[in-house]
Image (tube, rainbow, N blue to C red; front, side, top):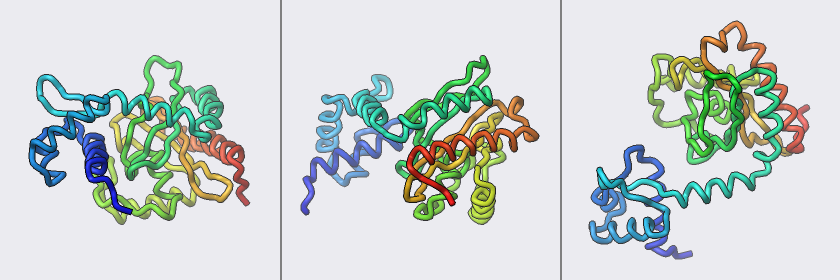
Length: 248
């Protein structure tokens, strides 16, 4: 089926804006789309008119607009997994005292779709709608380890001195994750932060997300990780059961 070129370019722009931390200029858009600057300008201005993009008044670069956030929130509130997971996130906070998170796979990354914050004054929070790398987050490692359809990321950027950047080391690490049933982020994405996560399955036995907790490394000591892991795995197993999965 033939695509509508202007619509396809508009969608491509949204993808570019989502990937660019510092925004995108009209010149960069023109180069990426293979069009002249005038055409690129008209496309991005149309998106801005409808709220899907906005321009920084200082840098003149474009970023995603508020309409994208509104649509994302509308989508997230309609997710069955998110609805079913909420009581288990609360349960994790009650049992561990740390922030609890739920993530799914999206655009080759872990998309945080819900969280319940810890009552502690020092806590680790991640905004709903945030995308995080798979190779150095506990939630992301669960998605990588238990979904056979996901290939290892082509690039493994380093975020802290503990980040795994060697593909072979990551493969071995994921094998261990599958054996033990949970994943750990030991200050690999954010220095001073530890996370534990476990996979959530549907009725087909297919991983559909991951649930876990995050907290300051000083409070989530290495000696306590086995306890946290068991609590998280229990919650993930119960949530999987709620999603009509029975593991043999």
